[in-house]
Length: 327
Image 1: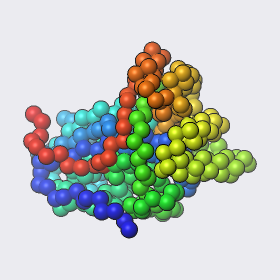
Image 2: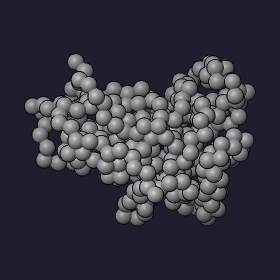
Image 3: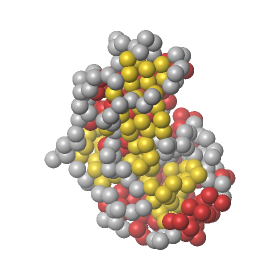
C-alpha cells in the first residue's frame, strides 16, 4: 500500500516553504542509466519566501528570471500566467557541493508555488521538481528531488520497501520506494572544490559508452542493490564494505578528485567507510563514522581543509513554514 505522505496544502501569498538537502549513499551516476540508487534527506535546509510584488525578483534581482535557470523553469512549470512575485531564499546547504542545494531550492520553491496555486500532492511535487531541475541542468535523474520532497531514506529503481511514486520522462520511469532508516549518524564534508553536475553526468555517460561500460554499470547495479538491502537491515559492516566498493567504481569512471582522495585518507582513522557523494569531480564525501568517533572525524576533516557537518536523515521533506515572512 502506498503510504499517505501529506500534500502541500493551499496557501495564499505570502507563503514560505522549506526543503532539506540530500546525500547519496549508493548509485550516483549509474541511476541516470537505470541502475538503483540509495539516498537520504539531510538535516541541512533551504527556505524560500514568496510575496506579491510589482515585478518578478529573486533575492532582490529583477533579472533573475533570465539569469537563474532553476527559478525560470519553476515559473514556467508552476506559475505560468501568475502575477509577479518577490522570491527570497536562504540556505544552510553549500552550493555546488553535491549535497542537493539546487534540488532543495527547486523543491521549496515548487512547494511554495504549488501552495499558492491551490495546493500540490507529493507525487506531483516530485515530478514537477524533477522537471524543473532536469530542465535547468539538461541531464540527471529524479533521485535528488525525490529525496528532498519525501524526506528520510529512499531508493530509486530498486528495493522492496513501500512504493511512494514513480517519476517519468520520455525515456524512463523511475520508481521511488521508502527504505527503513537504520538510525545512524553520518558525516558529510565539502571539499571546497565546486562541481558541475551536468558536466560530470555527461562525462560518465561517455565512459559507460565504452566497450567495458555495460560491465561497469552492472557492478554499480550490484553494489547499490546490495547496499539498499544492507541499510534496510542495519548491517553496518556490509554497508561499509559496499561504500568502499562504490568508491572504487567512481574512481574507475573518473569522477573522483585529488581533494576527494585526500579527504577520504584523512577520514580513514575515524571512519568505518567513506566515499564521494553526488556528481563528484570535487564536491563532497559521505562518511560512516566509527561509533563514538564523530568529533575526532570532524576535527580530522576540518584540519584537512574540508567543511564538515555531522548529520542525520531529515524525516520531513519539502513543506510549508508557518509564520510571517522575514523583514
